[in-house]
Amino acid sequence: MPISKKIEDFMTKASFIRRMFEEGIRMKRELGAENVFDFSLGNPILEPPEAVLERLAELVRDPPPGLHRYMANAGHPDVCERIAAYLSEQSGEKLEAADVIMTTGAAGALNTALKSLLDPGDEVVVVAPFFPEYRFYVDNHGGTLVVAESAGDFDLDIDELARKVGPRTKALILNSPNNPTGRTYTAERLAQLGALLAKREKASGNPITVLFDDPYHKIVFDGLEAPTIFAAHPNSILITSHSKDLGLAGERIGYAAICPRHADRQALRDAITFANRTLGYVNAPSLFQRVVAETQAASVPVAVYQELRDLFCDGLERAGYEFLRPQGAFYIFPKSPDPDDVAFVRVLQKQHILAVPGSGFGRGGYIRLCFCVKRAEIEGALPGFAAAIEEQRRK
Image (cartoon, rainbow, N blue to C red; front, side, top):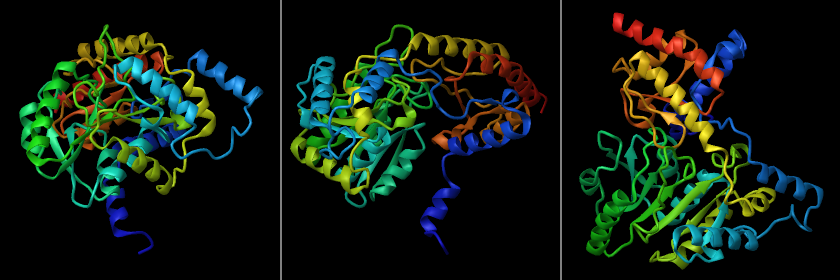
C-alpha cells in the first residue's frame, strides 16, 4: 500500500466542501462557467480593502531591509506588538507582543495550538454542525473529538455541553460567527459557557482551553457585534485569519492570541511558537505580516455581503426552503427538503447548482450554501432552487 491506511480512510471521509468545489471545476469545464452556480466553497468574492493594497504596494516599492528573510518563529516582533495593541484596545485585556503568534492562517493557528495542548487521548469538544477539518486537526495531534449538539436554533446548548465536557476534556473549539450556520454567539451565552468551564476546572484542577475560531468576527449583519471570548473565559486562545475580513484567503495569514489571564500563558507562548516551527510552518508569510500589522481595523464592505444574504434568503424563502437567516459569516444552512441531504445535493446538481450536504458538517438533513459570490450567480440559480424543491415535492 503506497499510502497509510489511516490517510486512505480519511480521504474517503474528506471534506464534502472540496469535493464539491472540484466537481464544480469539472462541470464548468463541460458546461461553461456561466451555466454553473457554485455555492460550495467560502471563497471570498470581495477584493482586499484599499488600505491593504496601498500598504502592499508600499512594501513592494520600498521594502524594508530583510523583508524576505527568516524572522523569529512567532513572527516579526513589531508586527506582534502592533496586533497585541489592537487586540488590547478591542478586548479590554492587556496583551503583550509575546501573546501573539503569527501563523499561516487560522488552520495553522489551530494546529499549532492543538499540538501544544494535547496528549494522546485528550478530548476536544466541538459543537455540531462544525467545520469538517476540525476532525482531522484534532486527530493530527492525538486528540479525541467529542461532538456536542447545538440547540435547535444552532445556539450553544449549555446543558448538552455540560454532558460532553468531562474529566479528559482539554479544549473546546468554538466558531462564531459560525460556519456553516451563520449563528453568532452572544456575550451572555459565552458567559454561561465560561461559568460551566470554571466549575469543571475547579473540579479537575486543570485548565480547559477554548480555541475561539474567529475569522468572521467583522462579518456580522443587522447591527450585531460579535463578542470575543476573553471576557467569558480566561483560559482561551483567539484564533483568526484575514482570509475573510481582508479578502486574503490565498495569502494564508493569521494568528493565535493567548488571553493574558490564561493559567498557562507563558508555557503556551513557548509551546505554540515551538510548534509553529516543528510542524513545518516555520513562520507566517513575512510580506503579509507587514501588510496586516497596519490594517487591523480595515475590512471588506460588509454591507455587500448583507445585500447578497438578503437576496439569497428572500429567494429561498419564496421557493419554500426552511432556514434561519444568518447573523454573520457568509453561509446559509437550510433544511434539506429530502432528509437524505446527499441525495438532494444531487437533485440540485441537475439544475447545475453546487451545494454541500450538511452531513459533511456533522448535521445531516441540511445543506450549506455560500453567498460570497456575484449577485448574478444567486439570481441565475434561484429558478433552479425552486425547480429542485418542486421536484422533491413531487416525489
